[in-house]
Amino acid sequence: VDLYGVFQSSDASDVVQFSLDLLPSVLETRRQSGSQRFSADGYASIERRGNLDSLILSELAYDDDLFVRKVVDDELYYYGHEKQPEEERRLHYLLMDASPSMRGLRQVFGRGLALTLAKKLSLQGDEVWVRFFDARLHDIVRVTRTGADYATPYLLCFRSDRGRNYARVFRQLQMELARLRREERRQIVVYIITHGQCHIPVEVVQAMARSASLYGIFTLPSTDVRLDYLDLLHRYQVVDEQVLTSQKDRRERALQIVEDASRR
Image 1: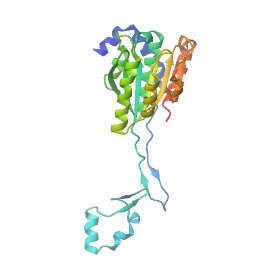
Image 2 (image 1 turned 120 degrees about the vertical axis):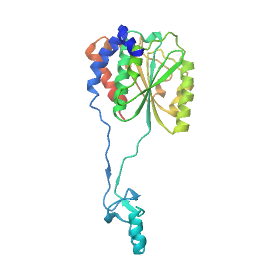
Image 3 (image 1 turned 30 degrees about the horizontal axis):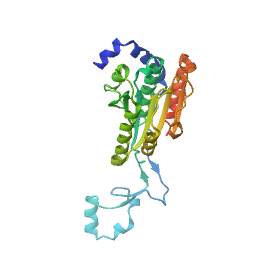
């Protein structure tokens, strides 16, 4: 149904065109992997398998028969010189304002940016969740590295029929972030794509900042962005009208944000 809706929506067509301008620049992203090499006189770990020259010397003290049995059963201990880097359990949480205030250029830029950023982060090997909000939080959409899921059509054609209630939405989000941090020990980065009048209670933002890194992206503000919680965000970006009305500037600004937001 979501895929069918993409073909019926003129708004989705604009988002697709903008996304196609951005995606080629991020598709070469690759996950960093490999092993760390330690010097000969330093060891990363004690392993069950290894080369004979890495065998712990105390293992040679066994009787011959016992030593042979331990070799056969892989019960000898070796020094390990190589170690795979530990995985960081990072969760990237993209929140997209879907209230009526985000229609038009704001919607095109915000959704195109979110799709591109989600793709880049997933290609880096991190877990990405995308979620719309208006007067409430909508369902979580998980973005995979392959993209072989329903996420893209859903993100392109989602349309809100509600107003906005930012205090309610972010209180609910704050409780969820606290639970994730407490139960799963996740390192969480929250990206909020909205406009310059997204007023959130300061105490709620303070509580969220204790559980996650907060990154704000404010699109097409009608006036200067003057929000009480700006200083509590770890980073934020403001995209003004002059940028959004120029196709070239819009593309360059979006790629700047993607590069900055995906930096570890």
